[in-house]
Length: 602
Image (cartoon, rainbow, N blue to C red; front, side, top):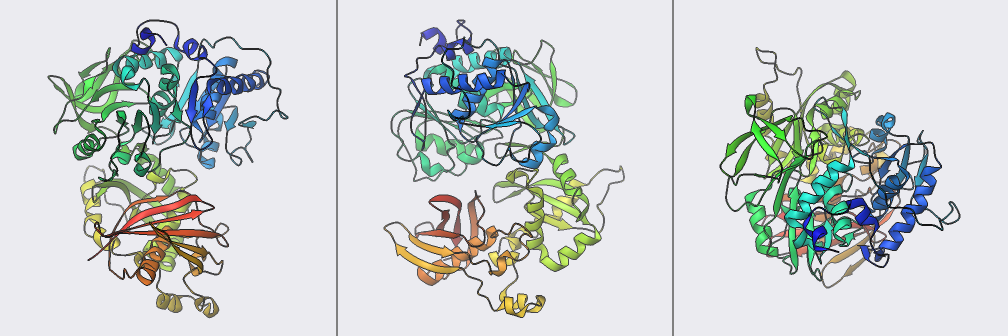
């Protein structure tokens, strides 16, 4: 690749530059093995042929595998089809966006089933579609539409033309292209959003550096990286770095999606030798500014070509080459100008960033109020042990009141969250609930948010006191459940095997369908509650590892796939005595189902 392309100097169209790559160049890596550009090219051409013969003009791209996502993106460019990025792949939410696309491209075996749209699952098989024998000319344009939360709570379509994306790519190349050359790229953020699309897919394709096909889910995966590498991350990911991870060969760390705490930035710099570069922007605006936090209140530096002015109410008035035209954009973000750029003062609407996700509080309230249990809802962000989450203050319907009395607060919240999952991403699900007879209003007819927040301040410690807080005890179940035969069944799974390895105690468990934890959780689709998984980890740690200690807290909880009745799983327990922490993980057929850390009191 020429120096001009590395630095972002004017040269050939970047789509043409991508298509001009040699077939033998490594393009992606992962558990599936290494992939070369010839494989990507062949797959894109085959799919382009299928798309060109279809009447569907707008295709929703829903992929976990970044290589297949890139293949679909290039196929849309080749065939002149519009690529639509829904943001996430939840079936109910995808169905609501149905008017925004004509077909679905996916690597999921279930997502297209039941859809009213035509759909194709990648990779295409030779028997299903004809593989092209001739090369396609380089694509000249890519029309893209992203969906993001609007200020009203309804998903908002954001059209993006190729000239907007290319303009931003050239700026990113000029700023950080040289540091990325020769690396392999890891990412903890999805390619389904503008940040991941630019940094995780398009930038490495242009710079000819290989990218990971799968997400880096845990900071521990960074340990022992070989060769030069770079990381595209979120503040939430960087906040979970273990001081013992370390790692050589890091050339660049980028963070976006929300504010990165100075302590987390400093820790990343100490562990990997690279102070993270924070990027501030949005789907509508593209990148606005960047910074490296060396001290508190480090100002943001506008991207080359971007001008940030202050309008009424301290709102950001943006002039940017990444906008669809030359007109300035009045943003909801509030800023204060500084000598080297500007400081962020917060947002003027109800869109917030939780971890790397943009969340509309209005949408969460709308989803809650659509449930049969909820009459009214007010949702607000909370901070618990330096972690941001959502709390919901509810007025319940008569049915909701019956469920509250029957289930109790903990199980009610779990059931409520499960009803919201088809529409909301996990980070947008409320984790704290308070119930009132009516929602208060100020004399001006507005929500007194400070008053609502005060409802949570006194009860957070109690709610974290232990797993049993969210489930009835054996004695309570005897009192409230009329099925005496059910209550005689053990509350623990069947222990089939236990093996002590060098690092962990591994237990093979059978999740008996008769376990009471599956009762009512949930009708028609029972699954094991996450709090029960923590409870079991503590139980076996006390019984088999001699760690019969009081619960002190939880962190780094991840629930990736459900545990269902009749399954066999393996529970891995590791005791870190120096930290007083119990590490647990549940696996099904070797794949992670859930994991976390429990702090035990001395």
